[in-house]
Amino acid sequence: MSDTPSKSRVDRMNRRQRKKLHVAEFKQLGFTLAGSFRPQEATYDDFLDEFLVFAESRKLLVGGSFSAKPGDDAGLDLLVQSEGLASCTDEDRQAMLDWLGKRPEVASVSASELIDAWYDYEFDH
Image (tube, rainbow, N blue to C red):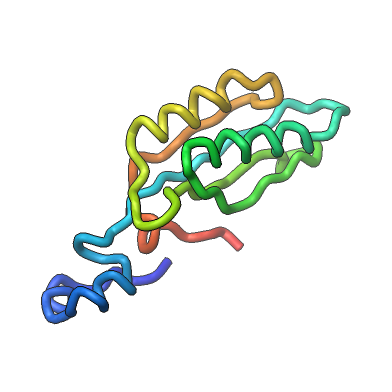
């Protein structure tokens, strides 16, 4: 996780610097998704393809880890943010939860509240 620039530092920045660092009016909100899969023999390739098509249809970018191997590590740990300089909305968050919740491959799924996608998330890797 990067340290968010202090308010006094942000106040001294010009517009170009604030945009480059994604702070103040250029802050981008995103959310995390975490979930687990039901054990099954089939591959998850189709599921992953359909998930990415759904995310792209909402103009969302997804990054993180996705593992369909049977066992304790089968699941997803993702950061979701909007394309470009836009922020995610509560509607985006709910749409992703609803889509994943309806999938038979998904045993459980949860999402964080909206967070600063550039400074409030830390990958476990």
